[in-house]
Length: 535
Image 1 (spheres, rainbow, N blue to C red):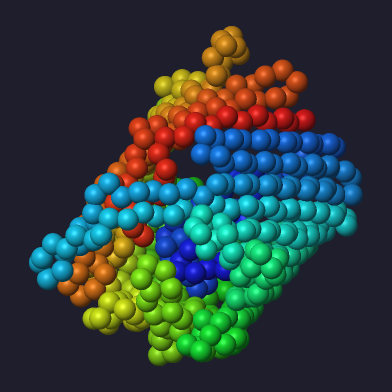
Image 2 (image 1 turned 135 degrees about the horizontal axis):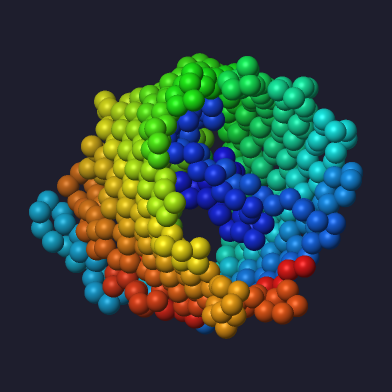
């Protein structure tokens, strides 16, 4: 979990994409191991480690909409451990998307045309640095320290932004200790601190005023053991503290601080009952300072037969309301203005989840199909009042049924070509869902051949999202049309450790005809070129 969340939006610009080794996605409810908020799955981002005595990397990317992206990293691996420092600097000019046609809203069965206007897409300047220091204290003991710093200034591109802008600061620090007790037993201790600050920056005065501060502290311990060479046991405990200082908790605009704590113990066991069948069980007990104790558990199995792998499982989950959902009381000045109200009477979401999946693996094919059904009690969402001037957080009464399915396929006709495609479907028994139900993705990739040195690597990728009715009130909804966006990218390895990148974003020049909260913010077709150097 990252600090600084607002309306389910997180400032992902603070993540240095050039520093990512890989991304692990654990699909399905995972509250029994990862706790609150892990209802749909977990995304683990693993950053790079030094692999050689000296590593250097520098890159620059520019596109025709005046985006600039710069990365630099240096790393070393020695007997005592390793050190890696990664940094980035990004800049984007603000731009404007102008309506070509009015947005159509339907209220009590009648069509209402919104006035045509324009949408200012903010530009930004952001930069950050992340050192990662690892020490091998002994052949059995390793510790890792990972602090980071991030800064961002948002330029809305309006007249008022010449005087007033938003600034964001993020400070993190993480510690992890891994100790190998025996060949089959390990103990990990970890701690992480994440703080995200927001300021109003008065440009002409060169002064800033804090408006928001969110900090999250987590400490944990985890014990891992392999039993009888094929079973595994995980057991652990963790504590989390969430603290939020904001001017948005009172309608007077005065500063107020709220906090909540959560403590948990958990265990998970993986039993290899045969070469073909594995059973996983897990249980977790949480104690929340505001909502007391909650027990979640998991039971799943995996069965392999020839080229197929079948998985199925049942789990329970819960999500406690965030501090913003509980206490926010703030007038949002944009878009005509509206009030955002928290709800101190919110109850945690609880859920029961069933997950089924099948994988097929062959020499040239990989196909995965998965479906998840969740019955969520007291689902937390926000709802417009009848006057459409206030958003209030509520628990939906009774149960909300959610069904999501996905099928993905990869085909490799040769070692130089790869084709990938996926389809995802989402539906909810609550008609006020703001998720488009159908999503398609496609990707075709050609990898450079040694004997065809003048042909570059080529990647063509695209995404299609379906249309959807998004409800703003009891009998008011807006239809959002489907659209697709494609990207064509070329890369070529050059002498002296250089790589040249070039391509086209939004290949078919899609621009939304009507701007809104749910529309695409792409400015249209853009061309980009970049150069990277690796040692």
